[in-house]
Image (cartoon, chains in turn red, brown):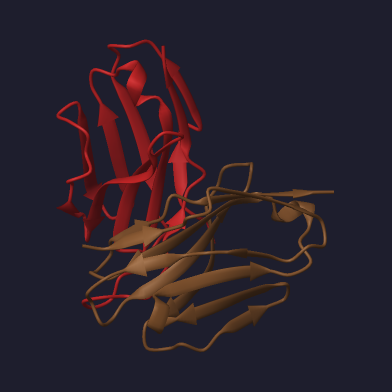
Length: 117
Length: 113
């Protein structure tokens, strides 16, 4: 079975440009997560969706960041305008959540390494 | 609020040594789940093991073993006879409410030949 698929794997762009990261979760999973990983802050949860609905976006840094999940098989994380401090590895993960709590692990994509010059 | 503490930022061992990675968690929930993930130098995050709060049985899988103790709120991970391929960043995570996990800062393990 295909795992979580993220694109692009690498992105280098100049500050001020719009950046769009894409994620295809594992088929059948109903929860999707976006994380950012940096040396300084470690692994941070930005936002997560359950059944395509954003449940918690408290980790989104600021209004320049937005995330959408138009259907169960696709999500985007957009940064507009981008800044050098947004440089990081962005991970998408998905899981199957059942009931009020679940012991299901998250399955991670390979990440997008983003560099803002 | 939930919290996961991995006090060991970096550990370095020589191949064939045993090594234990510590994980201490905080939660007020009575039902929760604990996980370990591995992030090798290639960068992907790989799920290793999970434990339910109501199951304190320890687990062994090959050279890996996990010790879960509710009394000390710890979920430690031991690698026996470490190998160079074990070099990675290891994350402990806690999950309570539906979906959301809290990750520790990770422990970077370096196994030298």
